[in-house]
Figure 1 (tube, rainbow, N blue to C red):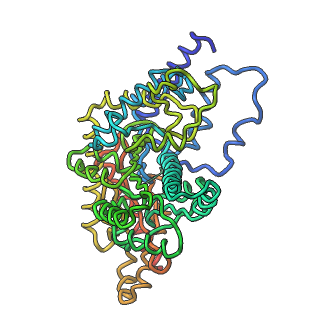
Figure 2 (figure 1 turned 90 degrees about the vertical axis):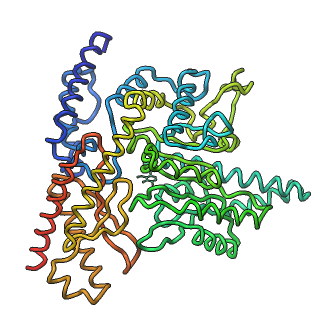
Figure 3 (figure 1 turned 135 degrees about the vertical axis):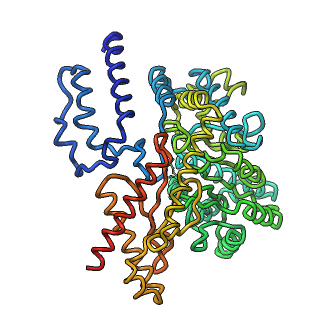
Length: 520
Ligand code: PLP
């Protein structure tokens, strides 16, 4: 493809993308293809001689589109959103055009310097205290995902804990051999902590880092971690000879968007460290993968002010709810040295005078991979195009729409029950059995719950099979106590109140249909 062919192809592709966005609502939100559908449509092997762009482009509609679930559709109410926007798409286009594996400053100074500037701007946008800005000892770095951010900080936390333990043993006069022996023992005892509501990313990070992971059980209905639960868990671990070194706390958990009790967690950690002055500090990470975007709103701006008292790091995904195409996960640390100490390896071929003299940031030392894309471009384009007001309006719109949906649920208490406090535009609810069945089992709590779970699952499956809207179901709690619930969250750029009103009608009709079947 030469440059004039590229010009033509790119114009055609842009036209197709614009049409896709303009007409997205008319497409069924969920793909209904069977597994392996694409093998039947795409001939095996690579063509011997190259094909024309017109022929390749035709296959987007004919072969790819049927297998796409349309995350940008206003009828996509499942998971958490994965926002896209035109300025974000432009950013990815330029990033693709410039393609540079900008692992250090010298590879392309603009890539590094823009990332630092944009992340400081985003820090200010979400009211993150100065402790996490690059102007002090901290700073931000763009990672691919919130999971990648958690792996990165778990590794840094592990190494910091071991390094500080070693310093202690050196001060106690232990020999090198003795210290080595103690490090080996310590490695086998390190525990990463999370609540039972935290995202599975912490468990995965622990597997990758080769440490144990334990969950702290939260109270059904509250779904939040607090200082008392944390203290009890730490005491329990220590009785078992285990060593807590890391903790994930969450702003907006995946199942219900609950927020952990940061103030009591901060107090519990500081009480623990005051009582154990020789033990290295537990690294706390605030995972706000989805809900972090809400911090753009003044009404949530007080939340991060407590974090510097206990949190070493914080991460949120601009690619979930802040209009930036996947991937753009913003990780902030209070001490960038902690990342660099754990992750910096400098073979001779990566050395250069700027890095050696400590004049520049080399983001390869802040992440797991070496190479990195120019992701700050899209964040820069998005933040400049929408401005603070535009981004606030986008997030607020989703919250307002969700409130309308909450009111609709609450107005029909024969059918629906909210099982968690609505938060950050997420509603989590269950469906009651038909009134006659509900009456028959109302005195038997366990049977009532079982019936609710059965009906809720049937309603969710029916709606997704029908495919007018896409929702997700979740299971809260464990065993006999568990509750099956439906999650509805609307965060795309295109969604409006009427979409949620229509969604409510679809859900309500599905309940009627399931009730009818259940009575027969
Ligand atoms: N943390 C929370 C609270 C989440 O809700 C999610 C995903 O929804 C993640 C982490 C993982 O996000 P990612 O896909 O960016 O790894």
